[in-house]
Image (cartoon, rainbow, N blue to C red; front, side):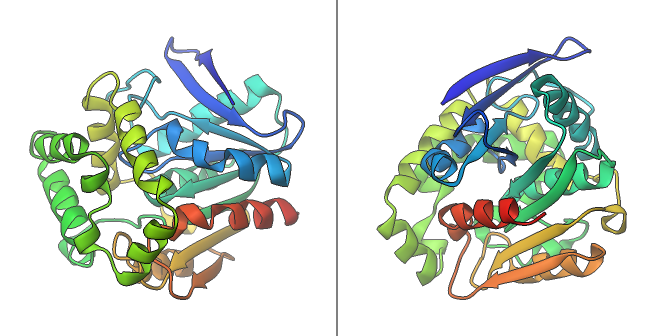
Length: 284
């Protein structure tokens, strides 16, 4: 693994991790929320084993990348394109997990010809009304309900989540049996979640709070504007991002595909990512 940085044209620093062979198939992996590039470290062996050059950037204010106020989700593709140009990538894939899903769709909507395929894994859908938030489990419902009220209402909730570490990020009593069993079989998930939250907030809470808040704001594009091949993945027992959220997104994105994993919850978005990497790299 290597951690690298790029000075963008506006003076901000963009920081990313790389895993896998330098001459591998480039895949830009977009972390969830609240999170940062550390989310990709659990994929290091999968990247090496599948010949994937996994590039995992911190979004503005998350981890080590410079905070950017007044941004929208649709502004993120410009940073990804600048990173791809810096790395000399003519063609690359984009994968977004959970809260990274909207950012992956933004990259597909922005029209960069270098993006040849996009995968969204248990990705958050538009949270544009109380009926959308009502389908989430208690923690996410509280987070996004507060987010609709603004940054000030959201900040103390995110602060409690970060202070609680893995126990707050993976609340076992709110998880379906499928998630509890998956986490028991992969105990590294809890440790990874705690490390991820610490790294995401190394410069304070404002970046991850803002990043989470943007999910309930207008994204800056319509799902009908998303182009290129897009593959959606969802677990049928996911309570973080209910299946219907993903079904609705897939129906709205022209020509997209939908894979539903039976007996899978939100934690399977991480443990089944090697499968997603293999599939997205096998497709033209």
